[in-house]
Length: 119
Image (cartoon, rainbow, N blue to C red):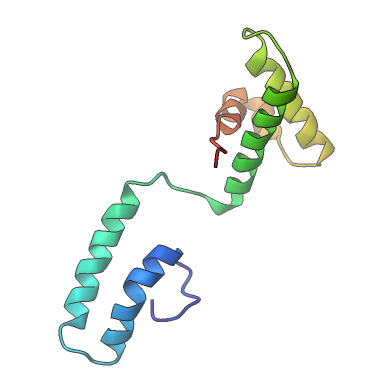
């Protein structure tokens, strides 16, 4: 935690790094404080949905594809998800993105397409 390249998120690093450096400097009570603050941060993080960095960009991209489709296509409500899925699969095919899982499990594609990309 004392190293800037420790691999944790910015919020966790900003919260724990000064205390970790205090532990390394031998400051009294720093170890207990680090333990308490680390447990509190871990509890905060457990409330967040787990993010897999490898797939997060694809999830975001699918959400953007849904927005593009929604802004340009005008399907009937009954066919909107079906046509949006076909549109997304075509884009992924052209981009040479491996999407065999989405073909085998269309509900996963629909979940990705439902990603909130609003600012």
